[in-house]
Length: 231
Picture 1 (spheres, rainbow, N blue to C red):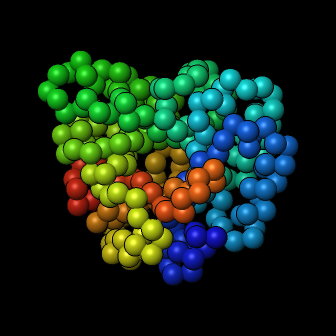
Picture 2: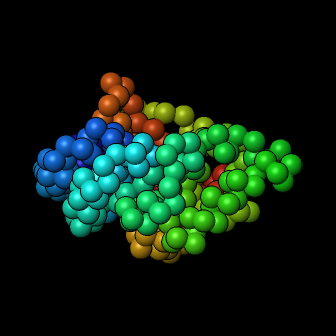
């Protein structure tokens, strides 16, 4: 519903990320519920990103594969949230045909320290994701030094307090209205066209399991604080 409100005010190209629990994926009706939401709000499927936790890899694979296949066929994007902290399996990334990896904050915290060893695991994750043609988002960026090191690794998307703290929907709309296109749209690994925007360009993240209705500003390009990337 919130995406529809923003879309009606001209922001139809922005992606909305929604956290999905392992329990929801085990429900046979989940894919139908996703399809119903898309139809009800006339939402572009590619504008919806479902964020999955690594705990899904410990579930019955056949059930999960069926649900995810139905969802992918709709055109919805799939992301693994907090990657590197749970039941990571590289084979599952291909088996589940994930579009995006979100690198957990614990791999970001020590970046920018000047010690190359602090970023070795993060660099390996970014390189692996690129080799699998996945988009990569770094979580929990708080310092410019972290942003710059991530950019040097080839990670072009990030989120964190460096860009914005959580804001309510009305403040999000103000930020979206302030964003201005910067150059021509580009195509990221998932094939989705992205527009580079001047000023922080957030994606909204809604958690269905949370009672807090506040939105979370998410994604911004890393090369400069004044530039950001929004799908």
